[in-house]
Length: 479
Ligand code: ADP
Ligand code: MG
Ligand code: ZN
Image (cartoon, rainbow, N blue to C red; front, side):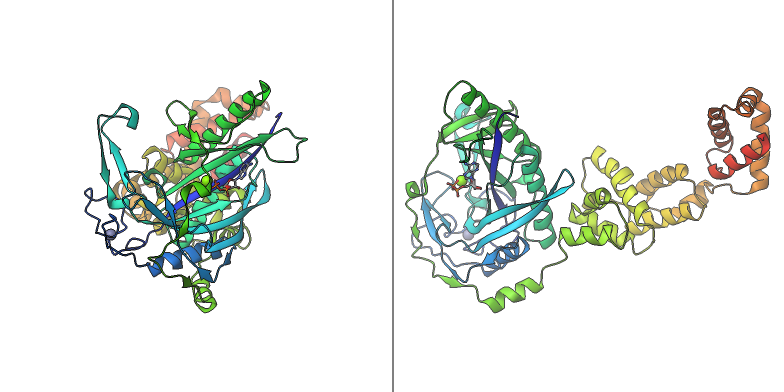
């Protein structure tokens, strides 16, 4: 690569508090348009905001999970601008005194750990939502506005410009989602906009010390678009520099369908927004005792969980990362481990057949219908030699259909593995007699012929034969 890419992310996280940031309307996603509203969150004259304490608690909890310093003295500022989704004409935010500063997140890239700095986290309120009559604002006859989202609490997590590739940016976002899910402050549903980010991207020739001029990409609402948007942007900027041009500082929007970014506006500066302290809200203090209490509520975080899985439970780093990435998956794993000692097998089922089934049905782990205990029971049947790995797939499918326990399915469908040497010897003899050519080939040193014969015995027993025993019996009989 001719240029080095520098990336800093500004991640917006909708907090899953019961009520909004400054009024008692429900903060819940959706609902009939303009039903989660009141005079305060629709900016009526005379309505006054009252801070939701839970919002501050969640912001502090996030700051602690991201190793930040929690600021004791706090205040809100008004960010002034006009847009129809912003009924007050200003957004309540925290420019001058963000509640958290100076943290970090460790990410894994190419097998190494890299530390990404967190500059700050501040609290702000979300805006309402415009719905256009056409596909986009420019080809619409009219637009309507829904204020249900107006004043839903957000935190903005600003990273240091420490990321160096689109891939790293994506991994960082995925890590953030894990942590936020674990601490329970957000749904982190990118498709519903509860986790979204703006990417600041610049490039520089390797010998250059200072960062290049950056553009800020908006509208990145999936992990894939974070990566693709930055990929596009680094190529676009490289072309500008290669032609002897200059990258200009601007805000661009990502067009998911066309796979390109478009210029929206030249970049605005903080002073353009005429920030000033909000006179309607009193400053507040986050007492260290309160912060310490919140710290006690932090659960085991993804890194610690991974260590537990690779340590005592002996999983590979790769498997452990796969298991712990999503909270529902990590919890499913833990639940399964209450009923079996075979961590490797549980991880294999989760990352193999279970993930494949979820993907093909477009579902998430929290929707998975088979109880974790039943997966463990199935693994135990395999390990005891009652069920072959091959027929386990049949049991798995049946569990998905009927929800029955694996032992019951094995009994009802007659799927017990045949490990009885006498019964298997008969089948083995029959197959040797029916396939004299293969038997001769094996005797002549062609090892591959054995695999074929094993397969034939499996077929003969409708998959129920114990493959290790067949192997052994065939070798004995043919030697
Ligand atoms: P704002 O975008 O509101 O002006 P900042 O100037 O603090 O805010 O920068 C926001 C984000 O841009 C941060 O995540 C920071 O790491 C990143 N950033 C700053 N300078 C650069 C740069 N030259 N290239 C890439 N990212 C940058
Ligand atoms: Mg910005
Ligand atoms: Zn309200």
